[in-house]
Each structure stands twice: as structure tokens, then as C-alpha cells.
Amino acid sequence: MDVWTDFFAGCCGGIAGTFFGHPIDTVKVRQQTHPHGQLSTRHCVQLALKNEGVTGLFKGMSSPIYTAALVNATFFGVYGGTVKVMLKFSEKPVNSVPEYKTVAAAGMVAGTVQLLVCCPVDLVKIKLQTGSSAVNGPMPKTNGSLNASPIASKPFKGPIDCLMTMYKTQGIRGWYKGLVPMFWRDGPSYGLYMFLYELILREGKEKYSTSGLGEGLLALIAGGVTGTVTWVSVLPIDVVKSRIQADCVVNPKYRGMLDCIRVSYRAEGWRVFFRGFYAIAFRAMIVNAATFFVYQSTLTHLQGRREGGARGASCPGRQEAGGAKKRRARKKKQKLKNKRNK
Image (tube, rainbow, N blue to C red; front, side, top):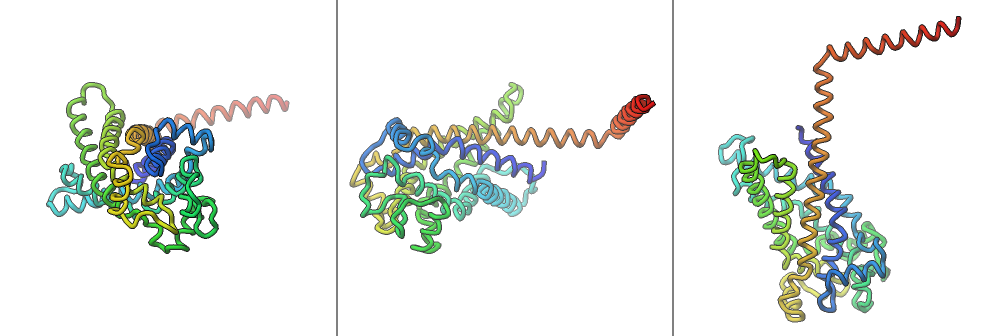
């Protein structure tokens, strides 16, 4: 299997995971950024459906969908390259199974590098998710709507309009608002994710290799478990990141990560850092289930087509037999045609 086959399958899985997980992600973000106390998952969904319809839960999905391939290419490219470099420095064969510490370190490096792409994507997603909604709509216009353009005082028309507005007001720096909390969220969490994923996958293959448990199902379980554990472990810093990125562009409420933690704690106590707990846990399971199911199905389909083509190419006898059948069929048709003409 070449790199491009694996990459294409990974892109399909990433897009599927984004599509199925985005409505729950919208609920999570709105819970975390709601300015007037705790908002239950059920109430958040009811408000969205009542005021915006089903499409309200899919706000801001275009930016992560369009960039899924680039994010996957960045993360897996850096991850694979880092693993190879670390194996080379440890004087081990490049194709050998890496140690768990190598996997964790490579995951942290890849998780940090992919922020160059993910931070602007996440910023646009959150701006569109939280703006002009049933949850954040009642906020005073003087403080700026979470989705309001500071130039036109109107909601952003889409991802491009959001990026251009941020660029006009703050330059490139505006695209990377919330980068510091994202670093503390994604750097360690991706290291933990890859470590747990490899641990469950390797141990599962050793213990259940003869039980009939397929590799696809095992990968799905490993991804679901590690995804849920990882996301729940970084929930507090994810709340801080969401609040900073949803903050007003013109008149920001928070001066930085530490200020956001201090202000949020004083206003709402420690419980505020665990908002969206059920949504984020459920989303992690759904996203990983969809991602790994589509990834494995696409991979199996592509491998099946390649093997079928290889079998045909490696059997000249079969190709000749097929050609002889076609020639006989053409002769029969010609004879029938000649009879009719007579």
C-alpha cells in the first residue's frame, strides 16, 4: 500500500468525522461560550432548532471540511517524518516498530505543527458557530456580537469574509487568536492520543488475534477510547480556548489565557471549566467511529481494486481467453448480419 492510498483514505475518514461530529461540536462550543450561566445540552439543541433550524447546528462546518485534507497531510506527514528521524537517531531500522515514547513525542511535535493550519480554521469555525445564534444573540451590540464584523457591524457572510475582516483589523496575528491555549491543548493531547492508540492497538492484536476481532473494529475501538479520554482530559483548556476565540474583536473581554482563566473562575467558579463535558465525550466517540469506519472501508475498497487489477495483469492466459470469447461473439454477430442481408 503506497502513501497516497493511505492519505486518501485518511482524508475521507477526516471529512466523515467532521460532518457527523460538527453538530455536537456546535453544541459544545455554545455551552462553553454562553455568557449567562450553565446551558444544558438539551436546552442548547432546542434553542438552535427553534430559532435556526437544523442548519444552525452545522454553522461553521465549511472551513474544517475544506481543510480536512490539508490538516491530515500536515499532521500525518510531520508525525511519520518525526518517527523516522527519531528511529534514525536511535540507530534503529526506519521500518521497525517505534517505542511508545517515540510515538508520544512524534504525536506532540505533529500536534504542535498542525496548529499553523488548525488555529485559523478553529477561529473561523467558532466565530460562525457562536454568532447571531439563539444563545449569543441577546448580547449587547456595543460589546460586539461574537459573529459580528467590527467594520460593518453585521454577521460574517462566511469563512472568507471572517478571515478578511480579521486580517483588516488585526493582520495575520488576528488569524492566530487563541494560539497559546491551543498549543497547551493540542501539543500534549496528540502525544497522549498516539500513545494510547498504539498501546490499545498493539495489545489488542496480541490478545485478540485469534478471536476473530477484525483490525478495523479494533482500530475503531482504540480510536473511540483514546479520543474520549484525550478530549475529556483537555476540556478545561478547551473551554478557555473557545472563550478567547469567541471574544469580541473590537472590545475583547479577555487579555489572554491567564486573564480568561481568572475572569471565568471569579464569575462562575471552577465548574465553568467543565462545560460541555457530555457533548465533548459523545462527540469524541461519534467522530472517531465515523472516521475509522470510513477510513477502513475506503482502504479495503482501494486495496481490493488494486489486487483485482494485479490478478488480471498477472494472468495472461485469462486475458487471452477473454479476447477469444469476444472474437467468437463478433463472428456470430457478423454471420447473423450477413444472413439478414441475403
